[in-house]
Image (cartoon, rainbow, N blue to C red; front, side):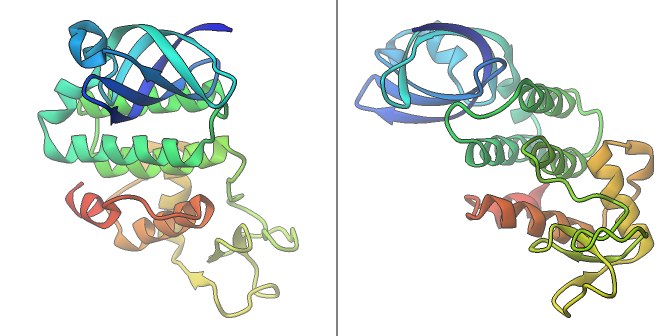
Amino acid sequence: MLVEDEGIVLRSWPLGEADGIFSILTRSHGKIRVAGKGIKKNRLMRAALSPLTRGRFICWEGKGELGKISSASALSPFGLALSSTYPSYLAACLMAEVADKLLETSQGEEESYLLLWGALSALAKRRMEPWKIVLSFELRILACAGWSPAPFGCAACGREGDFLSFSPARGGWVCERCACGREVRYSEAQKAQFCALLCGDWGKVGERDPAVEGLVRGWVNYYLDRNLNSEKVIREKI
């Protein structure tokens, strides 16, 4: 079946001397993986299939999970703007990797695509610090996939309250009755920053807090259930 859609290139792998395999998060078809022949010899397609580029793609769906791309044209080449500042480029790479590892082939709603598009645009235009964009993106794309800790109420028993102990394994904030001693307790200000990042309420995010970054990292890694490439190096630079 012929598929025409816009998307953002998440990753690419070389295949032989001139071919390649590409992971693309599309607007209407979720994440797809496609192979392209002679990409390195075609300047326009090579530019459109560069990682972190938003483009329009025409491809054939294969019988397996790997399709074949026949046409590609760039719409928003974020790479040049992002590479002008090292922290922004690293932040964009981390977000693309999170999206690629979170979503299986054919998974991903339009909301996930728009979220990544918006995050890359904000980075390219330097609207705010990269660390804010990355943390908010990670929490929100997990929420799109169905993993979002409710800010009020115990994730274990459902009892209402503004609790401050957090457990990824229990699904979020837990009350004193359900706490088993493995949870980490945070301050009200730290919880407020976490919730502001989750909602994209930039006016309430405040200053950078390593404890909140650790909270977000633990939540993301728990549900990804795999390590991110060079995660430690990237997070220290953004």
